Amino acid sequence: MTLFTGAGVAIVTPFQDGNVDFPALGRLIDWQISQEIDAIVVCGTTGEASTLNDKEHIETVQYAVEKVNGRVPVIAGAGSNDTAHAIYMSEELEALGVDGLLLVTPYYNKCTQKGLIQHYTKIADSVNIPTILYSVAGRTGVNISPSTVFELAKHPNIVGIKEASGNISQVVEIAKCISDDFALYSGNDDMIVPLLSVGGLGVISTVANVIPKDTHTMVMKYLSGDMKEAARLQLEMKHLIDAVFVEVNPIPIKAALHMMGKIELEYRLPLCPPEEKSMEIIRKELAEYGLI
Image (cartoon, rainbow, N blue to C red; front, side, top):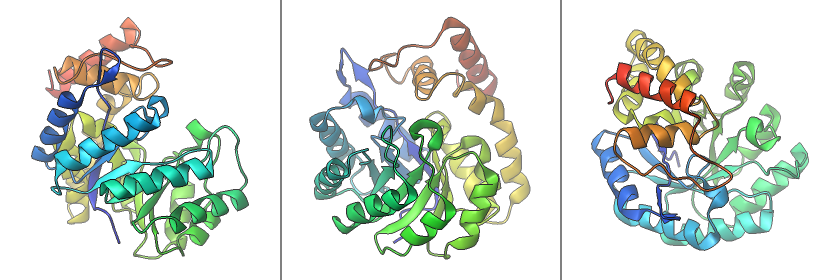
């Protein structure tokens, strides 16, 4: 049931004149696959899913599934702070042929760990495809504790976690309590190699939007035993990673893609273009990395 090993890109959703720019999304998908990305993760945080209405969300996922056409796994964001809505979206996206679902913790209403177990169990019960938990307390206010991961990992449709707490001690504790067939993915681009060192299978990455091949290579080098080269790549991309998080994600990564000539510089409010100082930082790091 493992969805992928390596680097999955949390792909942006390009916009033009207020609408999803499907031609640009298609070009991004083709480029990502040509650069050896291992999975396409669509309509997640980086894809500005919170500002897509249900129709747009479903159409964007459908387009991605059709464009990818089986070349790599497609994983779709279906999380919500309303369990019933998450079930609805999960069922709709499963029907489109996605390979798996990414389920962020409920935000704003902030449930307990008991509530998390019930929430995720009900969603996983409603579908017949693999689901990945997504723990990112910095955005949602809710952390998935290691003991909760242990309980949820017993469900046959819950096959992994994107761990974005930034807390390496928590990552180690999760790694200690899960079985070998439960996938641990980094949700922090600056902690990919540390997470791999405790048994992780890869990353669901923001920076892979601009350096898919290097992100893929770093993970595969580590998993094939070339830990020194993996560490070198992790350190080499550190300043670029810092630049694409100089403001809240996905503001900088979309600016970076715009500078690379791949998308329009367009967001959905309340997100807006970066400050000029941030633009200078992004431009400098892209140039130093050889991307522009």
